[in-house]
Image (cartoon, rainbow, N blue to C red):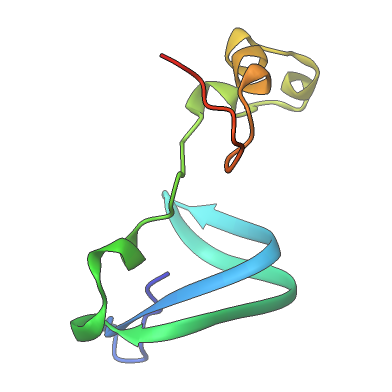
Length: 97
């Protein structure tokens, strides 16, 4: 996360971990973010930040799985079934592709 300073500049990056996260978006940007129950992390000045701080390890965006209506939570797509068959991250078993 790149917190914006009062003068509209960005000069640090926050690497924060939490069990739960809720985010409100407006115009494809985060308006408000809440993490709970506890957070832990570090703040690093941008000039000291390494490239790997800018990315979430093993993050994958699943656009086809995103519900667009309340009824969508009851639909199980082919993509979801495929995902459910994959071993969890960090598992010793690896999928061969």
